[in-house]
Length: 162
Image 1: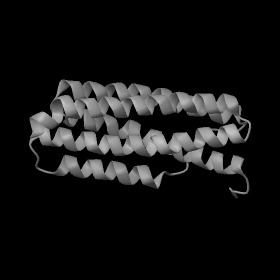
Image 2: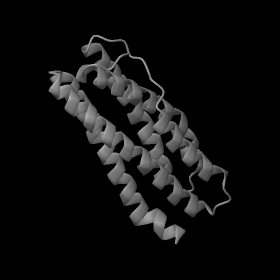
Image 3: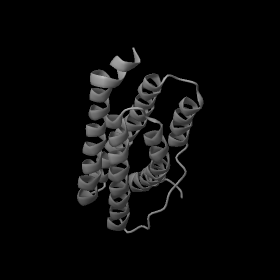
Image 4: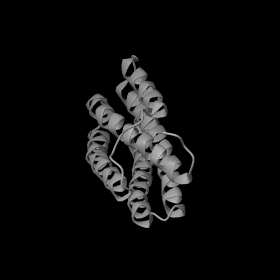
């Protein structure tokens, strides 16, 4: 697709996000299984359910814009997930692994926060307010997940890892 307009750029970003979210749904179960704390496992499992809803919301956005939902390989997410996989292959104490997995998950969240914020703004700019509202819902969820991970790290995991 030639990117000749802000709407084309938005569609390109949405395809990237669609790929990113699908990659996350494959990584989260493995991360949840590797944790040593029930609270972190529950957070990862809850985020998997939330991510599935975010994929459905992206599909709504594509529909609103008159396009089929189609992914464009998100190389950035692939790299972030690969970093997380490297932690799983290391010989780490369980609490230290939990701290590493939180860090990896927060890198993912920060990427998504930046991407959804950009997509929401572009949707507003091209007159796609309903799409922007849907993207804002996901942006809010990503921010809440990041805050939840920060609390888990500060209140439990980092203390155990230290």
